Image (tube, rainbow, N blue to C red; front, side):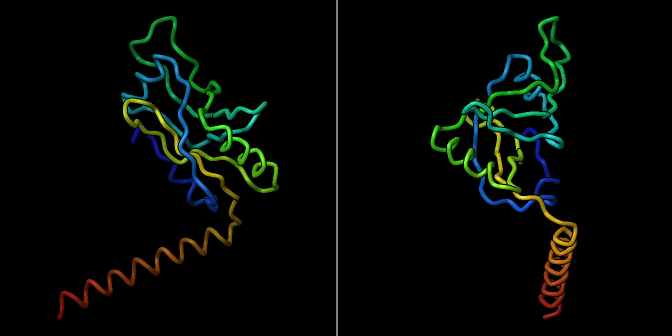
Length: 149
């Protein structure tokens, strides 16, 4: 795991997830292997039948030369044609967006987990926090009961 977008699960309702490959340059791969990336402001868009990852920050490689990459450049994502067609239909619906959840290496290739997501309202966020707190409190009570008995 190179980078994870924890805020996305808090800010969005996740409907579906996709695993996509990323077209990267050499210095980007080296910077990712060093564990440096930020998905916080990132999103993906479908343009001309291709999916592009926008606003993901991969810092310049420290030992790179004049041939270093731009940190926030657009990067092409590799998906199957049927997945792209499904995303085109879904993203045209109102309220849906493509959000990166995590960036990782799988069998030597950089992969990104994309989520088809719908934005949460502020009361939904409060409800999610309340559910999480109630679950945590129930687990604590069960643990106390097991220790006593």
